[in-house]
Length: 88
Image (cartoon, rainbow, N blue to C red; front, side, top):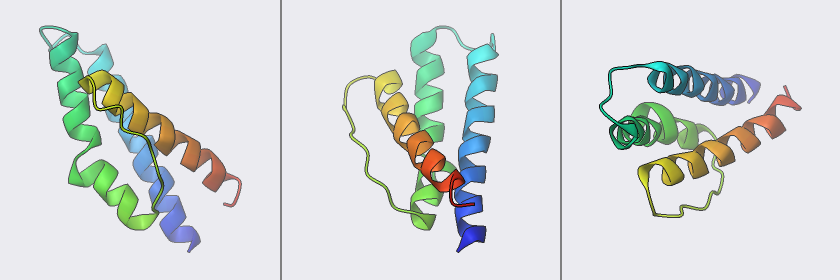
């Protein structure tokens, strides 16, 4: 079980590395484009789907903007990782 939970935490850490690179990049025309990319990444098979296959957790989707939706998931994922880190 600990290997799977560590994998869950690793996905979270990789997600933050990708998001930080995107936020620091000059490759996007505007914030909307930047947050659409982040949204698509966060809700991809590689990120949220992979994480939720390992460990299910609830989160509230505000269903508003790319930024708010992504941040709501990121916040819930981070909180869940905080709990798991205490177990590892």
